Image 1 (spheres, rainbow, N blue to C red):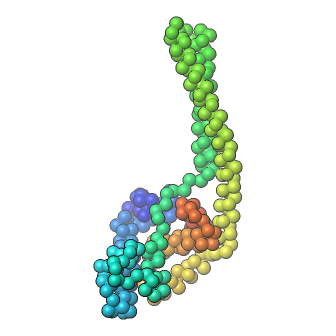
Image 2 (cartoon, one colour; image 1 turned 30 degrees about the vertical axis):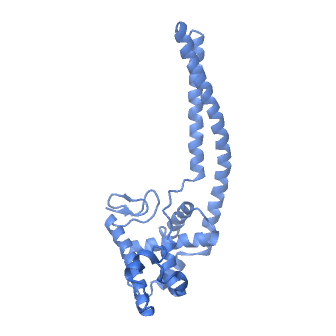
Length: 263
């Protein structure tokens, strides 16, 4: 079944794009795991070959290479450290491995949060007005209750109604502030996407990938889609100094869709 490695979700046959993150789907979870294992195996093998060729007498054993160097953990005393390694191996293998992006959560737009908050305020308003109305009807005798029942039920409903209206007022104020932030975010998002699409093109990204993959076996359409997406993320993070990885992912999904899915 089609599978999204980012959201860890499976889809029915015929679906090619994740409904949550809008990213391209792989054919199965097994394929996603195999691609990840293949990439890790390739990086490890490249590192091993480099050290065999350039440091044949070093004490950097293969098990140390796989456990410490690629994970970024300190090496045991007497072994090679990062300061001893050439810039080539640092740039090509070790730094990329250590700088892998941490898992990110799904980004929730401020406009969506505003709508949720606005709905909550409306719900508190409705409940508060209803509770106060029932309280008035009980105390005026329109809803007949006697003695302590009238006082207790009417009082509880009155207090609940007032409390809901207070929460409604506070939520409404917070929603108004969030709306202003949402408008700013929407404008910023539009500017970032428009700037990216003016600066880069689908052809440019594919040419860069082809140069990087020169001499290697051609990758599948799923691999190319993932590499395109990763390249867009890298450009966004570097060119705009965006610290929120979830926001970068959301921007990348929109840019990928407009760049490649409409071609």
